[in-house]
Image 1 (cartoon, rainbow, N blue to C red):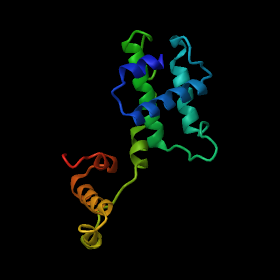
Image 2: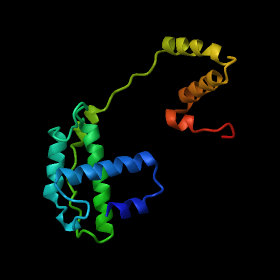
Image 3: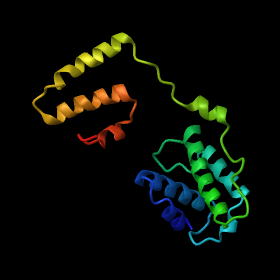
Image 4: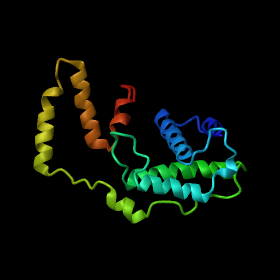
Length: 167
């Protein structure tokens, strides 16, 4: 079933597809469901059990950090998207993930709060970048321009790295 889902969403980035696959696989393993399962075995109780395992940190591989509320909410949202797809394609009668989510306040409170740089800090940062503008190494010149684009655009690092000169 998940292959059909991924075929329909083949336009997604590899990282998104990987994360979705991992989440669905984790859900199935947590509920002792095989890949060739009859879809109706997915019910609200199994979804609640998955949430409980995530919240109780019962699915944390050895040596890995325990997931916080933001990660748990993301995994539940990913699973919910899959369940909605199952409903939309008539594999399930109703949305069994309805209401199975993290409390919004818990997710919001867990997010990292970032402070703005002060004027003095920004001055020191940009002065430190100066020598790289005309550096003889092309990679360091590119790094300089990448830093400026990050500072002024609000883009993420991976978005900047993918840019071409023609962009």
